[in-house]
Structure formats: structure tokens, C-alpha cells
Length: 456
View 1 (tube, rainbow, N blue to C red):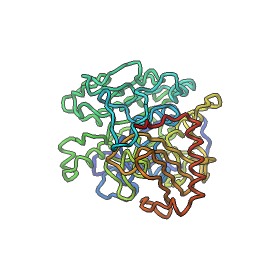
View 2 (view 1 turned 180 degrees about the vertical axis):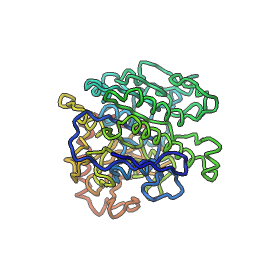
View 3 (view 1 turned 45 degrees about the vertical axis):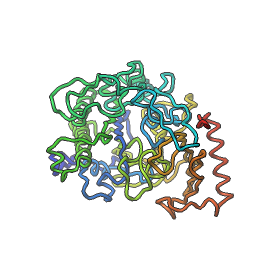
View 4 (view 1 turned 90 degrees about the vertical axis):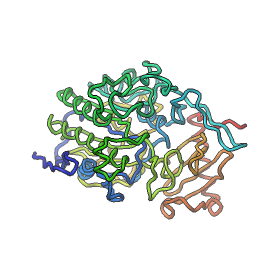
């Protein structure tokens, strides 16, 4: 099967990946999971919503596979979503419902008279499930590259981002770790990185470029065995910085330059898969850990909000031989779904892992329209006064989304089909519907033993 490679303006390769094979997959698929940081929908050019963004490799990935138009993150901030990815459990069940503070003891105070933040874990417990461990049971080589942010508080006060190495990726089933520590954002975007899990290589080298090189190297080294790579670059988290030449190319925009660098790293991964002959047997996912810190024009609010702009994320999946080229899926999916999807795709079982809250996405990959899911839930009992809806819990069922506040913001009901920007609170017009959703949400919160905010 031949590949068609196009040179694009970025100087990298845009892949037109092969059409699906008609034969069944006979070998364990490689799994590459790319998760951007703080990237909202609308900041990738495959959805045609922002023509100034230069992400041709992501566009090629989208053309080769399936775009998910209703992909959600488990939380509106980073650490809880990352924990949910690894464990297949919701942040509420884990007990990590907000980001781990870089400054020890950093707490956000809410409005006068409002509740205080609920308790939240400061590292990912070692005894929870991990998809990396499960993949190792199936004979996979496993690698982690990028941002972890699950390894203790107080990283800002460290010289190298290491609070406790016991909580680094290699203790959760990953054979190797480059970049993963307690940092929630880079100490430096440029070499020297001041990160104890990345060796300095070339002064002035850009972090995203370096991580992309390491990802390609991992694929080259592990090409002869089933492999899993979690590539979770720090981009496009603050501080917003990029190489000067790339900024100039992008009209002076550091943010668009960061996006192009992220896309180039995706291209390095695709090129390594093609060069090693592993592309046809690799499941590739592109995703983000929460909504954008720079808002999406056609969604309400941004990162940290329980409105759509805080929890909706871009998502593309490519899997030659399984997923139809150029397809689209509108079914709502979320972070916890990756654990069972990866493990089942690898030939493993999750029957004995009773904590899992996600669903296997493979039926959607194969063209089925829906999953057997009752609703999606969020729990964010924390103060983030820079956004409109925080300190609350949310349920999404069909087109209806109910927000339940905890003393600061009034409860709200939105119909996302009729009101995608969540401007019209129709709670008073639909009391029975709201009561039913409220009951389901309360039952879920009790089931997962969610930590609640503290009254003053």
C-alpha cells in the first residue's frame, strides 16, 4: 500500500493515510495517545473554524480517520482529567477534582459567604488502576513523554519539578518517562529545561520540538513489539512562548506558533510510524485535557468552567482497517472511555476492574451510532471566579444539561441543541425534567462518594 506525502508550508509532511483495510486486525495494535494541554475546539484547522491556525498534520490525521464533535474532558482543569485518563475513573471517584497546586498550600477563596473548596488529592494514588499496567500485561512496551502533573504539590518551589519520584509515570506502568514530574507547566520552554526528567541537549532548543523527537525515537526503538505511547506535550499551556522564527511566521502570534510546533510534533510521530511500517496497525488518538484557556468562539466560557467551553475538547481518532476515512461521530464521549478502549483493543479484559466508569469506544470506531450510556457527569467543587459557572456539579443527558451550584451561582438548565452558547436558563420552564436530572446527579455523586465543598 502506498502513502502519499505532501510537503506543506511548515516544512513538514502532511500524511494522506491509507484507506481502511478490508481484513481483520490479526495482531495487537500499537496505541499512540496524544493529549494536548489546555487546547479548546476551534484551534485546529480541520474543523474550518480558524483559518489562521496552521495544523496540517492534524488535518491529515482527521482526514484519515474520525472526528468526534462531542468529545468531553472529565474535568475543566488538567490534573483531574489526567488522572481519569490513567485510571478510567472519574475525578470525583478518585478524589482529585482540581489541579494540583504548583505552590504548596495554594487555595482559591470564593465570594464572601460562599463555600470553600472541597478537599482534593495532591497526587495520584499508586493503588488505582492504570491502563499502562494493563497494556504491559498484554506484552506492550509502554512510554510516557510530556506533562504528568500528578506527582505532588509545590513544584514551583523545586529546582527540577520533582516533588516525589515515587509518583512519576514509571511507577504506574510506563517503562520510560521523559518530561513527566510534578510540573503543571514548564519551568522553561527552552533548553536548559530545569526538569529533572529531561536531559538538556542543545541550548535554546524548544521543549515541544524536543518531546516530538523523543516520541519518534520511542517508536523507532519499539517498532518490533506492540507498543503504547502516551505523548502528552505541555503545549499549549501558559506561559505562551515559542521560537522567534515561528512566531514571525505566524504573524507575531506566540499562540499560533505554539500550535504549529505542536502539530509538527504530531507530524514527527506519524512520520516515525510510516518509516517503521507500523502505521497501518496503529490506533492514534488526538485529544485535550480540558477546554482552552483561550476561549473557543462558538462555545460558552473557557477552561475551569462547567459550561461547554471548559469541558468540550477536540478529538480525532485514526485506525487504518477499522475506522472509515473522513468519518464523523457526534456521540458524546469522555476521558474515562480511553481505559477500556485501550485494554480491549490490546486483547485484555476489564471485567475485574470494577471501578471503571468509561465505555469501550470501538463500536463507534466501527460505525455504530450510539453507546449504551445513561448520561455524562462532572463534579467541580472549587472556586474559579474568572469564569461564569464553577463550584458545582453537572449532568448531561441527551440535549439537556443541568448545573447544580453550591451556594454561589444559581442552578441552571440548558438545552444544548437549541442554545449551544448556554445563554438561556430554562430551569423554571422545565421543573419536572430538572428534578429528574437532579435526582440522577445526586445518585451519581453518592455512588462515587464525591467530596463536597465546605460551608463557611
